[in-house]
Length: 280
Image (cartoon, rainbow, N blue to C red):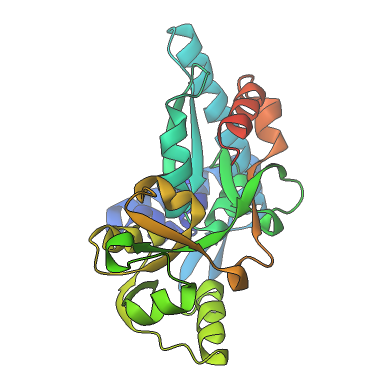
């Protein structure tokens, strides 16, 4: 229960809309406060959230529960389980294709998470490993470099009689683009405006894998991470470099909390295997 509240952020979000369940959570937290003689919750607006002491106790509980799960798995001759989080693009094109070849006897739970959630969950030990940008890693987290995220414009070969340059491809074909106003989208639109490139966005997508699917249809082009080339074979699609997006490529790394390594005996070996298997 305490771990659920810590992960959800408040009693209301952890317990849901049921008044009886919220009352049960509140009562159990009060029992813990009485036992440890410390305030575990405080009011924030209309909701109850954990205090620093409450979050610390939740982390201690999470560590203990994790070790008990590991003990039970070993005692019953079952593989222990670890979790790994990454964004959709890295999961689709890097993590999932390579995990089958991972040489380690553990079970893995793969989670589609944003960078901030990955780092927060690594800090509070509710996630074991994560793939994030190097600049997102802060102490005490540790990391191992995996590769640089570079981009290319992918377009169907059938729409051109010879390899086009990036400008011609963009002005010839409609684009599938990520929606929103992220750094990637702003950089692209700034380049197009500065160079007078006529951009026709036909489809807006939440994530790169969706844009990749539209390119496979043969009707659109899209700027995608180069690791997407597995979905877009070179005999059917052009992969055109886009230097204006690759001047400062993002370093992707495997991150973890050193407490995970200390607490879980299989974690160090798994970190080594993951860093090797996911390098690109």
